[in-house]
Image 1: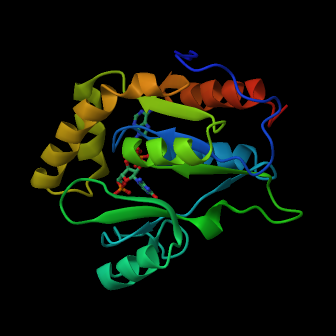
Image 2: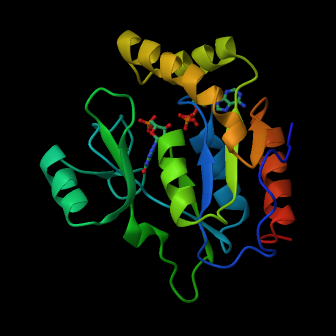
Image 3: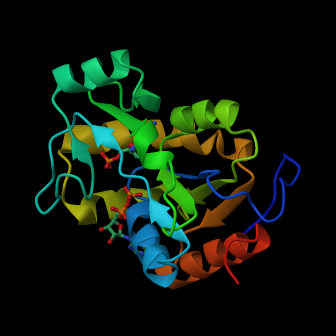
Length: 204
Ligand code: ADP
Ligand code: 5GP
């Protein structure tokens, strides 16, 4: 399913440097879908690498998957105004944030940056960039979301329960987004998001 919800369409084509926001519950497949999209459009799109205080998962690389910061360093950079937005995402002491430096584009590089952030972060970005396109990735069901979270094998039972609880609240706010896409199969979700990127004029 792709659909335009409540807000009117923004400027066409999207001006360079306006961020694109992607949200969706933890485990729905945002990273998986984004990886494929970035492979498809390497000259158009770049991923904003967020900062976080959560520990790296096996295989995650500093500066690639996240900028992994200590709580002290995160707080210092927050105080210095380095973040476009930041939030304590699961209410368990781990902070996540978008660094302003990640959102600026450089000459000759991709003109658009995509942010993988939670629904509170998306709201903060919208107040600063009202024309930012916003996409919400949905699971086909909560049961499927739980299955994916478990299959990833990266979270404790307690963390899975917390993420599912937060997921229900996030799904209830999906109508705040301009576009909603169901991640049923990865290829279909990538194609649906690609169609949206065409609609906003950033890929052919
Ligand atoms: P997120 O970034 O939203 O937290 P991930 O991209 O890490 O989610 O995906 C969570 C798990 O679900 C991973 O194990 C991934 O391989 C799997 N997954 C992602 N998309 C699909 C899909 N369409 N069908 C089945 N499994 C999927
Ligand atoms: P994970 O711990 O699974 O990598 O990410 C958990 C959640 O944090 C996801 O919903 C993701 O969208 C969100 N997130 C990641 N980076 C940021 C960020 O910079 N800001 C905000 N607000 N949320 C983020």
